[in-house]
Image (cartoon, rainbow, N blue to C red; front, side, top):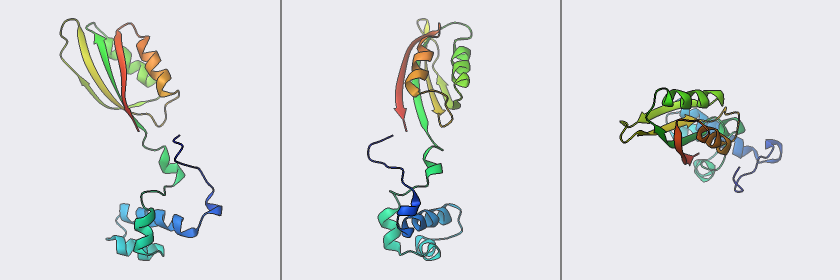
Length: 145
């Protein structure tokens, strides 16, 4: 977790921070047509909404969309990609996209985007397990959010 964030009980925070989340939810669900309407319905000013909208989030939303992008170089052999997919599945990741190049010179480049919110290990452990596969020549973690 980043050192810029804290997990704090809402019991000790001002009520308007929770109202900012309420206003955002009203906008996301289209129950409010504008920020002005959402702020009014939540009981806060537009200024309060704008001041805190990018800084206040509900705890259950913080893990719901963890994504990672991994690039790999695989040997050009049968079941190479299948072994990678099985490894990803074994670690409870959800594959969002896979892009594989045409194999040239005995190798193929693969780019995989993953939902890692339910992953059963760390991203470094996943990369290490992918590297252990016989068909995998190289693994690079491109991005994590």
